Length: 441
Image 1 (cartoon, one colour):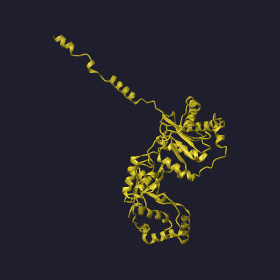
Image 2 (image 1 turned 30 degrees about the vertical axis):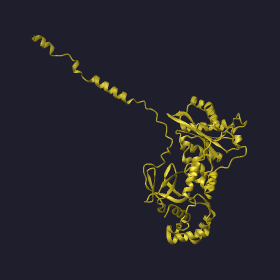
Image 3 (image 1 turned 120 degrees about the horizontal axis):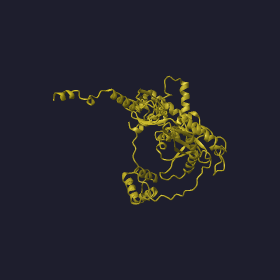
Image 4 (image 1 turned 90 degrees about the vertical axis):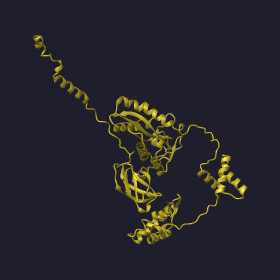
């Protein structure tokens, strides 16, 4: 069977696999089918559809009689309605005049051959061949920007901080563009996605879910795991254009305030641990910064943030799902997948398919398998290597232990010198035979 028909069969199987369980009673199966018929489902083509109860019942009957093969649709012969010659002509017309639109190219082909492809067909074909329409991009004018409402836009960035216990610290912070309130923040010992997500999750648990998050192009901020978290909560993730930092002025100004008012005092006072650093920063933000009138807004950040009332907060389950990580893997012929040195068994019907493995980065013992966005059970650990967590999910390392003051090499050198003083140096003793030799002479 071809891949498309196999994908359709898997789509049908993923919908009815639970309801087709022979251990269910008739009423239990009917309840499951009713719930399935009320939900939207994503097809292999990415479309959202609803499947009627009668269709679901038919698929269950087919599965019971003929297994997976009965869910695979029969092959159909499809004939392309646009000839290869016309598509090649469309490419030639685009190369000839790069600024021609797809609509103009379709018009020219129709004029020449009295029939031709639609504008959309030409557009899709040229996009597949990486032949975009040419022309000079429009000029962009930049001005002062401020989000209209709280939580419309959070801007995030990282600040390099002081050294604690011999380790450099980093502050990940998210600033609400409208109120200038600091919504999510956390000091850590690494500038990575794990610490960035921790700050973002803390902020959303306390201040609600933003409509968009604006970040630069640092390695921690372009992670696919961060993109998954934002997509799960309906957040638009925006990255600034390299070498064009427009829109980042507010958080840069906030970092200057952190240096001038917090870090200067911290360097004078000193700090013993990362926990103490976070505790002091929380106290400064919530007691001083959030209650100081901002020079541009004329209000305190906290008052401006809560002017329309407290924002709705996401549920713990929604946050948990959003900050799970995922990796895509191809299921082997033995119905197994590998993830960072560990091997897991999955449903045999997924052999040859690319599945999504969803997991907590700090715990690789529990892996959920999903296909086309639908749950396909848990992956069963088959062989566990040395990675119990994702390699990037490193916990904060404790500061180095205090020095003992023991100079091992100095002690060895001192022992050698002492032994040398005790050893007899025969070469330095007087020659006892010299007087006798003189008498004989």
